[in-house]
Image (cartoon, rainbow over all chains, first blue to last red; front, side, top):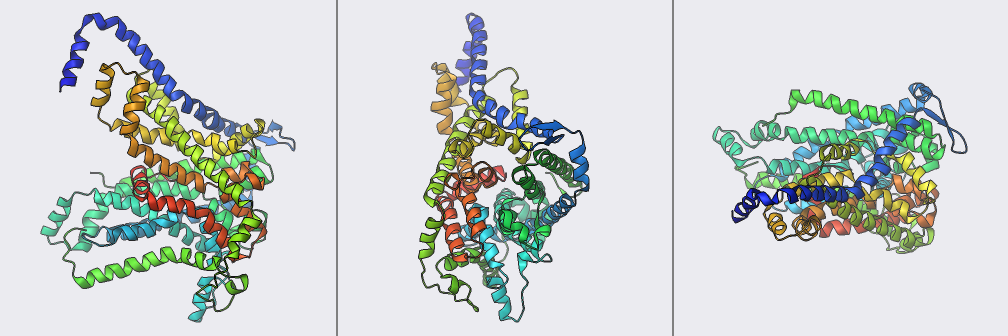
Length: 318
Length: 276
């Protein structure tokens, strides 16, 4: 209270008028000085590169790094490139199936949100463990679990008389197997966000529902789910953007680098960003690679806009 | 769910479901550790043995096959450099956006935000060219410098600064403190939880980053652990005990940090909800 009075006193003093103008200029200079380091860094390493990538997507790169303007040629090539087509189908399939992590996370968050449950911290830690583990390490472990001959999964399956496939080297099972790893490693992340969302729901709503005679299951569907829908919308937007950029997991699971191509399931695994990596840094076809990521950008914008349109049908605000 | 008349039996069932799910989360790690202590012939035995013979030599072999010490150091320096740099630089800009008045503030903040909307793959070719023209390929600078600047960090910390009470800084201003003093002596200490939340996230993302290190540092001595592991896999497709030992060694440091700073990690993620 005393502070505000003192401030209004200074404001009222007419003698302070000119210096305050100078103060404003000084404050502005400080403002620019404070944002300059990040501002310049972002301009050089992020903003300008976006424009450059857009420009590169209309060029072709020679063997010695020079590039020439070729107009829409890269995009025309992209439209009929069967490898890009496959990569798109794989990426979109992975993205859609990966959304299963959301209902899974909601169910487990609801279970963990049970009043008076013991050991919540321990359970939460276990769900969260894959989120903090290096994706390269995760992919290696799962590659081993999925191994056709000696992998733990097939060994367990053989106990019940099932002859398991060669999971990630079998075109029929490779992508679903990858999706399982993607869900396994992201469910804990989603769970943390949903748990925070659930804890923010006022208790009165549940009390009112309980008075109306709703049991825990009805409370979940009538109170928790609708009030959680903005969180679910947010998580779904973020997951789709993340899945469309899948690289680490698939790079290692398909076999890391040049040996990946000898994996018979490679055409069913390769993602858009993996193809970008190959074109940009293995075959050094950087103009084409730039067109690939421009297409990815447009896909991300389109799918995000689509989700924003859809949200009116299922997201409840306040 | 509130006030459910939970009977003992229902609670037991709940724990059964949660234990089963937790096992599914932990089992791959357990199998990783077990395999890392087996000989190759043990690991490929049918049916598999559960208890390993304690073949610690696999860990020694990782050090023999990879310049593991160098790669470990590179990863530590990259993660530390990016974390310290981002927390410092982003907090400065965030303070200016949250508290100082200057012409063009909205426009500049909008430009910063626009970086957040772009998928990172769009930066990579030009960034690579910058590194190449500076002669920075296969260097520590390449691993650290582009990662010092983050629109996300500015955005997160600005939100944090906006939520802080103004009284202390007003008092300091009346005592004659300038913006630098206020930022350093008042805002930073007050914003500590926010700085820690950003710090742990940057640490996690940097440690686990693959694409950028894979592209810029291709000499084994200059690689980070994530890229080094993929190289190990490339030349060593089937020696799973060694691959398990290597992947465990590479991922353990961040897992250890997580165990100590669990609350900060979880708060950071719950508050921001943004993935790396």
